[in-house]
Image (cartoon, rainbow, N blue to C red; front, top):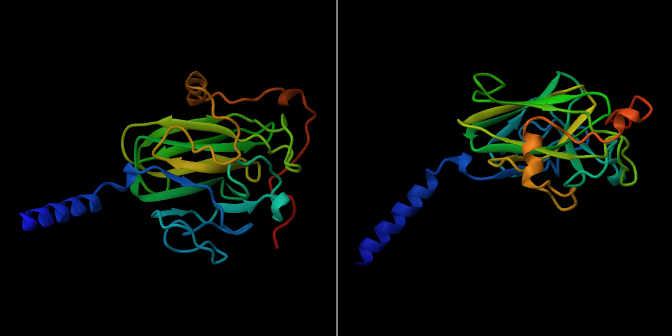
Length: 239
């Protein structure tokens, strides 16, 4: 009987090792990524371009994918009210930040984003690495900046709206696109259509509201009535 119990335990342990990686929900809040650093292999058992390392989720980012720290926390980021202070994802060139997940993930994908008042963005989920293969989800993001207050700084990038989608298949990469230096992402959540809200994020909408968000509608408010002004996420040139 003792030998049978040991064999059963070994079998269960073996099964746990072969469970698909995409079954778990993973949240990327970018805390610990350097201000202005390329994220690189921060979540892939390596480091960002400044030598900082995070948890190893088997997730890597393109060289265009940068972290930036809130100016209120000593960084160069012109944003506020991020769901998990004080670091977010953005890009300065290349047209997009690309995330690769070698093991893949399924069920859903979600995040918070902040854009300026005039430029839209998009997020595309692919079943191949490096934004290749079949498109599993294509999300259009509306401008949402300016109709908020910073904490205390961060205008107009101070409204981080939740957005997410469910999809069929196994995703292996995501493109976060928009106008360079005009859109930021935080609390990227793999395996769920509802993003992790973080410690201080705005309230996550009720299910009925989520139905609108999943179809591509954002909360714009009165931003179109505001005076047009040129702003950027990067408050000062990076050293």
